[in-house]
Length: 360
Image (cartoon, rainbow, N blue to C red; front, side):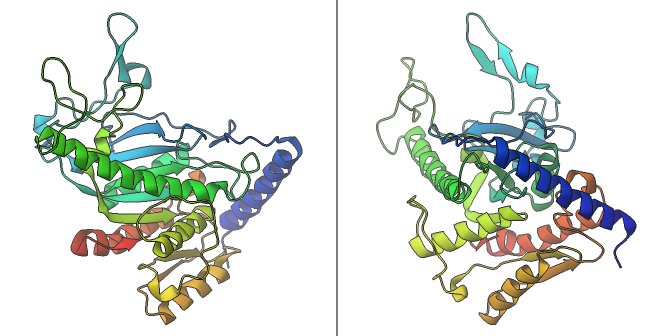
């Protein structure tokens, strides 16, 4: 039998989610640009310097046509020798992460990788999709920030949390399209980083360089660098994991199956991918809670994957509820901590030992 705390929280969770859905349906207007967070949810500010837990974060808006954004979580294990990076563990408030200089310009005050990559370790990439019933949550909420930091440290991986567009302002299939866009953006970043390194080493011509013979770089129409420095220095996209909670797991599943159908990343409008045979799916870990009202479907899906000879273990946690590992009120429970550790153990089997598995 579930404990009183579990039953009470489960009832309140469903009650408040139903109220939020009803309020949004009554008040919303369609917004093609979209929203990626709600004003009533607590947000954690990004800190581009390594904080006490050894993780630095930054936010990026990656699609000029929509509100699609990401938050990057970089663990300090990406640095080969912390002694060679000044103030590696300095906690810098957001108001100080951009240092003012003369005129109207600003200078970035957060962590910057070694330009020659000498002190940079390549880490796997985990693309993370938050839960929230399609209408709430965000890549920068306090709960998602804590969970993503935990995963980044446990897995020794760069976590890219996706701020996909929420309903009802952005209708189906906006969230799915955003998931595919971010995966393709990661692929584009990998290609840009390789071109950038080629120019730096003099293997190819072109690019933009300063009059003083400074390092060439790839820039957009406004002269801003198109290469994301943290990903260029530390991300190994050949070791990619898709991770999702609740509706985020639905997005992760769609993105994986769609890319299996299309092959190399190439964005197209939404289309069904149910015809992809399960035998082609990547290794898939499924997590369920004892008192999750949607557990039966997840268990059935895991069973079907195993019938197709896919490495698809099922982790079932006792006396827990839906999203127990990512909800803010439950993040400090032993079950939530154990779940993250179990995920890390399984994920590392692919991203650490074999190194080229596409998993989630």
